[in-house]
Length: 83
Image (cartoon, rainbow, N blue to C red):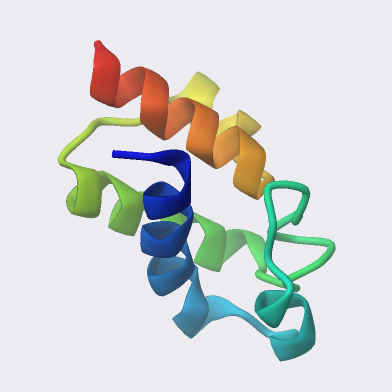
C-alpha cells in the first residue's frame, strides 16, 4: 500500500469523528487529530480500534499513545504491516 492509499483509508476512518470539517478537507501528514480535527480522546480510541480492524493489525499501548497525528498513525500502520 502506498502512503497516499494509507492516507485515503485513514481519512475514511476518521471522518465520522471529525469536529472541524475545514481541517479535515485539508488533511495532510502534518494534521493533528486532537488539535486540528478536534477529535476527543474517547473518539481517538475508536479511531485506533477502527484502524486495527481496517488493516488487520494490533496496536499496542506504546504505539497508541504516539498516534496523535496523521504522520504518526501512518508510520505505525506501515511498521505493523511490514512486520
